[in-house]
Length: 347
Image (cartoon, rainbow, N blue to C red):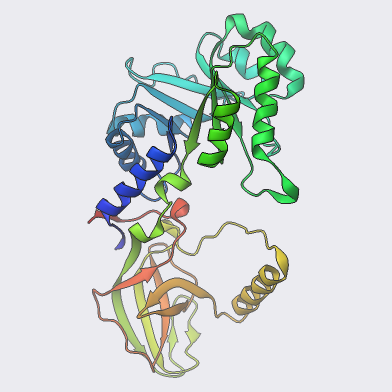
């Protein structure tokens, strides 16, 4: 069993600390619920005393509402051509607020509450400054609940996110559009406070996911059950591909495979000499079939004996090390946003 063990008191204390630091917080619950599950994040949002939550897609609205009730659910993915009409998908007590990033989206959702996404240097989607005149003309037939800016994480070359947000606020205030609420992503508490002081008539609401739920990794840990330990002699064949053991050792069969997200990795950008050397070293190790796994036993990082299976992984432990017993647990370093656990234990 692949388990997530949570120090509940410490984790919830961290959640409260982030919420206190960021007034107007809108928790983001999307994807796999940052490893905790959408239902758990919905429940925790309610415990924080918050009545608004943001989800990634329309498909995530109902799982969140099944766990808790909210005054407002914001869908972050902008409207796009060909999507299913969401009317009737949620109860009448909840207001579904859509995101639009184009004039087509604004017209398609005419009369429904929307948040208008403004294009930033992220250049992912959003209306541009050149679209403001058309936005003003469409405004009378629209129900704009606010505007949003999604900012880059990295800040090279002296990039100033406060300046970028301020530019958008000034552009919107120069029109007839009612800028009362601006939703922001990837700003620090100090940066948001700077904007609040500069623009006291605008309510800035931070949308936060990773920093809120995963801000302190010491409050939770992933562990995998040892299902079996098989002694191997030099020359013994093992696994689906019948590889040969180069030396004597132990084959550890552990919970966790590709169905859980183990061994699946998103591409990374290698920066600097050190980062590129590390990427090359990992590539060489993989070419030699000596890929490090995310599993550890007694502080020793284990190698994959072969690529992970769907629900279990085969790991190699040298004969010089004391092997675990069936039922023991291995520590696992996982990417929370891509991992699906068999069990979440709120300790």
